[in-house]
Length: 253
Image (cartoon, rainbow, N blue to C red; front, top):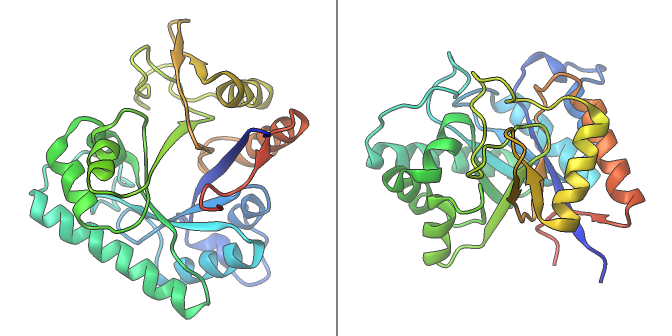
């Protein structure tokens, strides 16, 4: 059986890209990726953008996920917040419910949940916040391999989806290099494409210190705000398909 992988992207994070008649970056990325992590208003986005992204994704057969975040629009959800777990649980449930309602209106459905930014990194190790996220949802959860949030989700009987990042640097322990440090972003299309093919074929990625790290994933993310995101996504998809790897949503049977 041929190898297969999902290609996901964080979308709906800008207000102006969905003006009528404008083929913005999000729309172009939706022609390349197979899953869309849609901002739910807490770090970016608004109801109009959520609806437009969901409609556009559904037309293209792209799977839709709720990209939930700490309530932190000022810092784009990239600041860790000491939120009480019961508050975080309610906030995550609120975001997922909002996207589900908006998606339903445009004839789409929400298939999974993926934390964003600081919340994504926090639930790798923080069991309190990881449990709050899991208790708020009844959908598959996307996260870093080996993270607390995936372990807790699996224990609750939810499907878990391990994720790799095409455009982010890795430390030797398998965690992401913080965006404030050198090596956090990988922006050369050829390099990004080659490392994604290797992740799928071999289950490894080279860390910033040159060591190989085991990394087995069902989905690979290209961030829409990485410089040259569209070229990166296209390069990754072309390289995967040329390698005989099937690119499809992980939600497919």
